[in-house]
Length: 178
Picture (cartoon, rainbow, N blue to C red):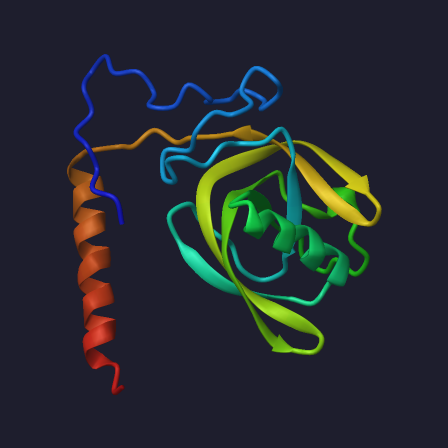
């Protein structure tokens, strides 16, 4: 959860990467949620089948593809980012066209072996990305990302929706028996 800053009337977007492809001109730009982490020109792609990883959240994800696992573990050792993008429904064989056009650049926080066939990866969403291009190299998909940000809306309706959502969440937690 990040506290929202009040927006001035003539304020500029916080990121100078908005809508720009991350080529050589943006290589090394830092992420707002993860200071010190730099954005590479391309990211290895972890396909997600049934969950979305949003910036600012952390989730455990099971990985059983050994080629992909080798790439991701190498990135984890160097505090690198990977792309996490949801697959379209009913995909059997994954191709470049199997992915939605928006996802998240995510940090691999931890890899934990859970069986002989795979590991549980704890991923933290860092920033929303669009797909400028999907590449395939040796059976691994890579994404050339395009950073996307959304303008925060501050008004009475948004404040009321946020308060209602918080109250409902607190009620669910309070009524949970464990």
